[in-house]
Structures are given as structure tokens and as C-alpha cells.
Amino acid sequence: MRIPLELRTQESPAQAEAALLEIANFGLQAIQLGDRPLRLWFSRPKVNVSSRPLLRLVNARDCRRTAWVRVFYQGGLIGELDVRIPAQWASFVLDMSEALGQNPGAWPEVLELAVSAAENPVGLVDSLQPGSLPALLVGKGQRLGPTSAWVAVPGGAVSPMQRMLGDFLLSRAANDYLGWMIGCTTTGLCNLHQATGEASYLQALRRRLAGVGEGFPLEGRKGRGEVVEEPGYIDPLNQKLESFAPVAALAYLQQVEPTLERAQLLRALGGQMLETARQGRDFLTTEGCFTLAFPLAACATVLHEPAWWEVAWQACARRWDFLYRGECVIQRAYHDGRRYMVNWARGIAWLVLGTAQTALQLPPDHPGRAELASRLAGIAHLLLQSQRPDGLWSVFTDRPDLPVETSGSAGIAAGLALAVQAGWLGTGALQAALRCAQGLEGFLEPDGCLGGVSQHNPASEVALQTHYRIRAAWGTGLFAQLVAALQGMV
Image (cartoon, rainbow, N blue to C red; front, top):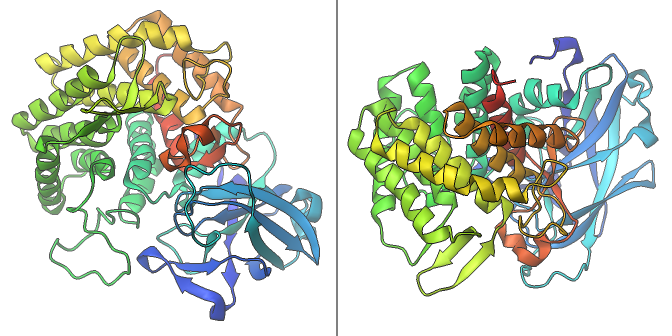
């Protein structure tokens, strides 16, 4: 789906006093928040129809704190944001309609806001670390990374789903920092392009792979030996296991638009993934199915390396053997018996979705494909049994008393839908995926970002069980994979 240009969301990046600016990763500009309100300025977004004015604040650094972020306009408090343990580049949104109205003609040419932060003691102590309060990404010239912004979302008949597919995923708002997070949105863009043929998804993918983040850029580099001046640059050949996820999208781009340079980079990255897959570890996680097996299999496909398929599907099977225990899925388990995040929805999503995506990279007659398909068929009853009446899954799927978790639900349903599409599962799984997609629509925010997402792992199991949820680009990417998988089946 595409939104007519005149109805597209418009945004104006934040600017701050030069004397207050600091340099964050990749040379991005940041401003540290504290008790004293600091001023931000925004030019009026270029929109001429009734629109909802949103303030999007983007966290600059990994911040293991619980805090209030307070926003002031014309001397008065217009909103407080409850910000808990935010990841780098996580965004938080405040609707300013009450203060500004929804008539752009009445908005100021330049909006001046003041923002402060204060501690918010909410009783979470096991995951907190000492450190500063949140900082914000700001800077008008930051074209490759995210930035805080004044966002104008036009009204009318455009649905949140259209916002997600035709706007949010194509914008800088969908940028994440960590590789596994980036992999969710880049895979979503690949799947949408493959399902719809819409060139805008491929264009957005190119921009994202040429952007910044952990291990980036992957696209548009002159060579691995070049000197990169950006502060905080991480060479993509020195990534940890979870950071390989975006390589699957790079492999897809090579399939669509092959180049010698990209092939060379994929071969180097494939070698690094092979080395990582073969390393002995004292623990395994379900993430490895999505962040290691899947991109390795994708590289094997585009580079015609059948030996890599073997390593990829066996990396999946090894995790099934170690982490799937009949009625439970363990997100992280150690060989000494320790185990964490049992039946966590997103942990199950990594196992199910990662396995489906990996299997689909294997040739139809490959024995590993049939083996992985049988694993998905074997867990389907547990997934369907634990699905809630609203179509989603609880944050811990065996605890229906706990709140829902949208990103894990999207990932589980996307895995089911891909398995149905491949002929490995039947009507029951398709209906479950459809119910989940319908339920998730109600969690889309006005700009198309998915809300209702549980925080990343450092928040701890205790924090995840609370009703506190965030909006997340990575959750939106998982939902996009579900939408793409359902194309043509409904």
C-alpha cells in the first residue's frame, strides 16, 4: 500500500543550543537531559491538511534507568513520558494536539519546547545500572541516522496500517541501533518488496543498509580496508552473533541487484558467520535461528555455497534440540543447567520465525528443509493452544494473566504464516496468523509504529511482566514480515 504524497507524514528535526551538543555514536548529535529544562526548536512541518502534531524524542544512548521526561511549552507542562531502560535509538512520542490543535495554519512557524528529565522510582532494581539520565538525538543535518522531531500526521481516511506500510517503514523513524533490531525491519522491507513488487521498499532498504548502526554501513562502502572517521564505527566483520541479522537483507539485495563488491562483502561476512557458528559456547539462545542461521542460509543461496546451508540448518536444529523442551521454549540456556526467559513470546518468535526464514532459503529437495519444517509442525499445537482470544500471545505465553506482547506475537504469527505459505502447516495455523494480524492493528500508533512491545532483554523478566510497554521499530518490522507472509493467502 502507498500513501499519496500530499498525505504523507511530515517531520521537522530538532535543533538545540550548540553549546549543549555532545557527540554520540557515528557522529550523531545528542543533548544530555537533566533537572534543568533545555530548549529545543523545530520548524513547522510542511503539511497543509488537518494533522496530529506529535513530538518524537529519540534516546541517544543505552540508558539503564527509569525516568520521567517532561515537556514544556510556553512555560507550562504539556506532557510527561514514562521512559524505562530505553535502548539506543528507541523513540517515545507525545501527542501535542491539546496544546497546538490540529490546524497547521495555527501552528507556530518555529516551535520552542523545553525538555527535562528526572528519576522515576518504579521499583525495578535488578536490571538498573548507575549512570546519567536519558539523552536525546538532535540535529537538523543528521540524514543517515534518527533524530528527535516534530511530526505531523495528516488525518483523513488513511489507516494506521497504511501508515506503517506506506510511511513509517520507509522513514528514518524505523532506524534502530542494534543489529538484531535492524534485521527485523530490513527483513520486513525485503519480504514486502518480494510480496508486492513495490519499488519504495527496495529504495528504503538501500538507504537503511547504507545508514548507520551497529556494524553499519553494509552498503555503499568502498572497501573493507577504508578508514572510517565516524566516532563509534564498528567494522561489520567484527560483530557478535545477534548483529548478523541485517546480512540477510544484504543478500536479498544482491539477488535483486548483483554487484561484485556486494558479493565480496557477503563472502567475508559469510566466513565470519561460519566461524561464529562453529565456536563452542557455554550457552545457546533462540535468537541464533533468526540472527545467525537465517542470514548464513541467505548468503549460501546468493553465493551458491551448499556447504553453508548445512551449517545454517544444523545451527537451527541444534537450538531446537537444546531449547525446546516439550511444553516450553527457553530463550537462553546454559550447559550447566541455568535457563532464562522461559516461554517468552519474543524468544519463541526467534525460534519459529528464524527457522521458517532459514528453511525457505534451502532448496525444496534439501533434507534440512524437511527437517526444519517438521520442527515447526511439531510446535504448532503449543502455539495455537496458547494463543489468546484476541489473537495475540501473552508476554510469557504460558501465563494468560500477563499482558500481551506485540512484537513476539507478530514474530510467532509470521513464522506460522510462512510455514502455511510453504505448505508445511494447514488452515488452523493460517487462521491463527490472520487473527494475530487483526489484533495487532489496534496497537499501531498514529504514525504507523507498533506499540505494545516489551523492552529488550536488559529490562529483566520482572520488568517484562508489568503493563509497561514501548513502541519499537523492530516490532514494526516483525509485523511487516507477517503482513508480507499473508499476501496472496487472504
